[in-house]
Length: 290
Length: 321
Image (cartoon, rainbow over all chains, first blue to last red; front, side, top):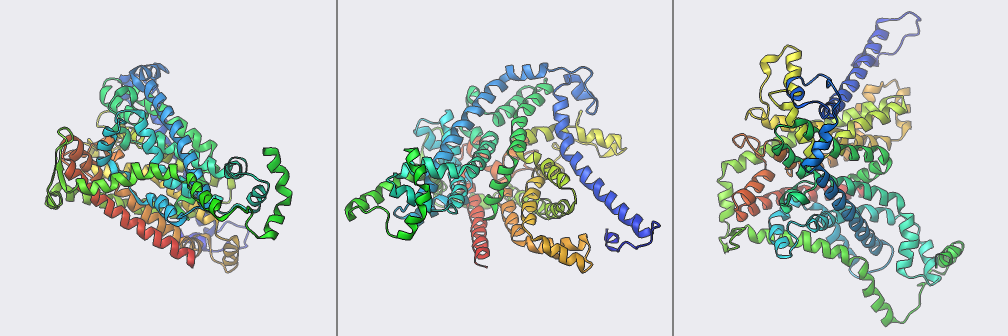
């Protein structure tokens, strides 16, 4: 690759150096394109396989389906994907609302007004970022049983909320802290109360970071597996990640239906990523870097 | 009320000029107001304490007891869960697999991703840069369960994509049940993780590279330094902090691996893909040995906490400098 370092000579005829440079560019393009294929092909294969017959899936992995058979999607729905999908939507929506609200409140309390012990509270909240969910798993089994939350959707909703408050608060706080203060002060002079300032001034000003927080929470709640596996036993309450795993172990004779279920689970998140890319990137890079 | 607030906006500088406390209540009402203001943080704090911190503390107690999920009996046994753990060859097998996971992930999700991001950000076309970054990220948006099931199909001996490709290029001798063979199963799962994760770190590196001032590249180009040497003399040194952070995040993630193994092999065959997460799950929920599972959780806690503390020191040092 170092050949590309040689300067182009002013002569009009193509020199070996020119060829080498073109060759280098071709190699680079081939490499980037190859990587695109490695990423995209398995996903396309998944979607295409969902349209095949079971025999076709087993016998010819590369071929196109002889006839496009969308029946696998219907069968996947019948075998539980419909209810897994609904449960995922329910758990995701409620935990997103709870997480965003609780985190935005906490961020407001920590940045825009004076509260007692704010440093300790900040440490307790952001310190939660350091804890792996696995570590709390075993005691949570007993606690959720004794609180009557075991095998209910509230278990997932509350856990997804609690475990994401540190990150979401951190994210929103770092944005709120940079907002100008004079607007708040003016509102206070005008007799506005804190909750009015929060709802009418601060929250609207935080819209970009709130969108980032919401998108990242959707991605987390939609894809979470460990808690969903341990705390939900009832097949009617399962969310997609665990439901799909159950489906694949049960439907050993209907692979297209499993592929259909996987495609159904994957498409909303891929769409979400492409639609909210700007906010996605902002949230991710804030989260890891600052 | 909203109209009221809006009309006040232009007078904002007045408040700053005044510089004095904006409301003037008596000391006692102000004190009560200060306590009332805690209401903003209390809901979040309560959720955190109930569902995150309290279970964490309980985990230490559980790790010192033998207990059974069904009978509910608990008995203090001191450190015997830990001594059992440190004599268990499967625990070390799992730990080793986590380390392998971390090592390979660093190669692909840190170093490879960094070089890839530099190459992408060097492309002249804005549109190509954006398209490539997005395509490479797609696998990170889908759930590990979907990826796990997808790769189970890819690795399958019958009708699997990988064996099909090997057959097509004349390497049929290499065909095998990739996840059914103890020699290849762990590498198969780790490979799948790289497929899923490299685009995520590439995207983050790309963001870091975009923050590097363009003038540095222009100046070095005037000195006759080509684009490939620029990657090594400008890009990589200037995103060193990001590289460090990504390393810590990647290692920490490698010690929390669970979903991808659970969906593909569940730790088998013959414990060859056992990681700390699956061992914890099996001990707790298949063997019902909560104390032992809690001891494994403590090991995960210590490893991830140490990494997190390094990360905190790293970021705060960076902020100072």
